Amino acid sequence: MLGLLPSVYGLAAAVAFAALSLLALDADRLLEATGLALLAVAYLVRHIPKFVVLGLLNLPAHAAFLVGAALFAYSVADRMNLI
Image 1 (spheres, rainbow, N blue to C red):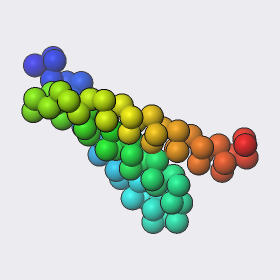
Image 2 (image 1 turned 120 degrees about the vertical axis):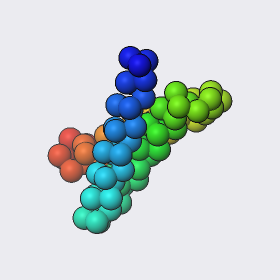
Image 3 (image 1 turned 90 degrees about the vertical axis):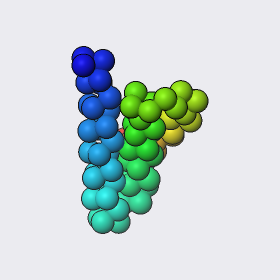
Image 4 (image 1 turned 45 degrees about the vertical axis):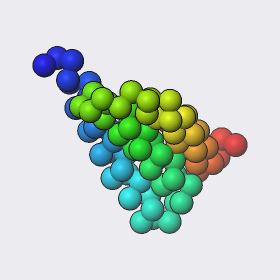
């Protein structure tokens, strides 16, 4: 049972990122919405293999996580005038 908890937390994070992505899209912040959507997809794909055996999806999940995190960090840094 304890091995399943990280999967549940990962799926909860994916749902949270998807909701934040929809909120950002509604506020016309397309770059931030794209970054959050990629983070949601990355978390979803990364944590599904614990429920279903899809081990080959780990590499695309890591790539989507890196791209999504970079886009999100860039959009937040741009709004905070850090760049």
